[in-house]
Amino acid sequence: MTSQFQSDLIQLIPRLRRFALSLCGSQTDADDLVQAACERALKNASRFREGTRMDSWLYRIIQNLWLDDRRKGQVRGTNVDPEDAGLSDQGRGSREAEDRMMLATVRGAMDQLPEGQKLALSLVAIEGLTYKEAAETLDVPVGTVMSRLSRAREALMPLVSSTARRQ
Amino acid sequence: MSDRMDKETLAAFADGALEPEEAARVVMHLADCPEDQAYVDDLMALSEMLGRAYDAPMHEPVPDAIRQTVMGPAATPEAPSNVVAFRPGRQAVAGFLGGAIAAGLAAFLILSPSTSEPALFLAEGPVSDRSPAHTALTDLASGETQLLADGVELYMLASFANPAGGYCREFEVIQDQSSDAEIGLACKTPDADLWTVTVASALTVDQTAEVFVPASGADLAPITAYLDEIGAGEVLSREAEEQARQSGWTR
Image (cartoon, rainbow over all chains, first blue to last red; front, top):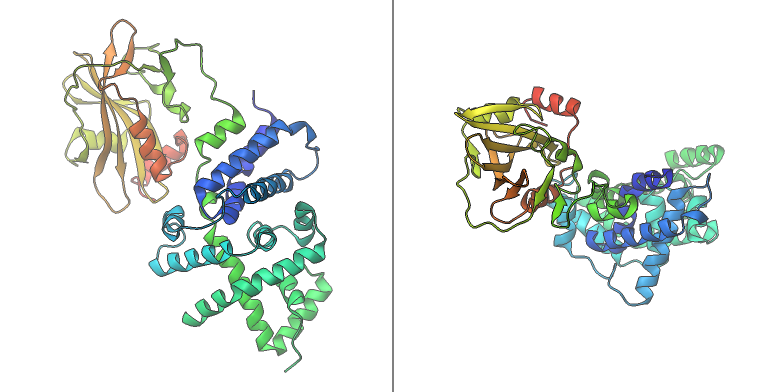
């Protein structure tokens, strides 16, 4: 029997996979992370409060699992294989080789960011959360989200500027 | 030219995080400050690139392993331990299996070894556009059958969209006068006129169990693997299949 909780969770999977991919850099690791997060969410389903945002709750679970793995020295998110990254989008949305290379470069640069900056940038710039929602998910003040975003963008901006200059 | 604005305000503007009044103030400022306008443009370009860089999962089906974790193993009827559900993960196909050859045939495969492998009627490779198989692949709806030759019928099982363009169709070929049958997958890309059988394997009818058995002892993993490799989603609904047929299987 499928519960509403399960149905809501399965609807979120594409976004959770995207968020996890932005943290891990490889789809295989990202899917392991999402699977572990789903297991934890199902186990703790009774703790989920109706009326609150399930996506923020899942983002937080993914964040915690990812940080746990990093602290244990596991491999998720320690590197990105541009070839693998190039294959992961299977050409959709990035048909030209240069475009694929550029996106792979973005992923590589993202992977070099410190954890907090990467999380803030992913939640706001990729997942579209507001600063307040990102702050609640990360359990930090809004000002911290803004400063982490600012530093992350400072690190990645030369990439965009140089790309823009080439075009 | 006006003084530069602080970067956090510009970032908040680019993120849509400012109150309307403050956003209006930034808009006025940007009109007079090309440097800050360029910075905001770069911020937006970065967000757009990040979105594209991690966009792939939004267009992919939920992986089977994650789906099973969330939804639980697909409900299957009681069955002997050596019987596995037909094509787990794409259950919609199971309902069609065997419909053409005998009503009530169980939608299961018994995994048992076999010593011989019959020749395939519809082997891997392009399908001639003058052959009945081409007509069947192009015109049949899932669940329908068409004669390919005397005593040889093609039974259409299901259709899938290929995310890279085009479609794949899964079929059985059943020979009335023998226990031989085969299952295959034919795909068509938008720029091709012909269907190409990409995966095909032999089945044989187990007369005692009244079920199809893979003649080679292999299961249907190659078809599932191929569909997974191309990122095919769930079986097309009848409406979606009809639309695809009317469009000439191009997309």
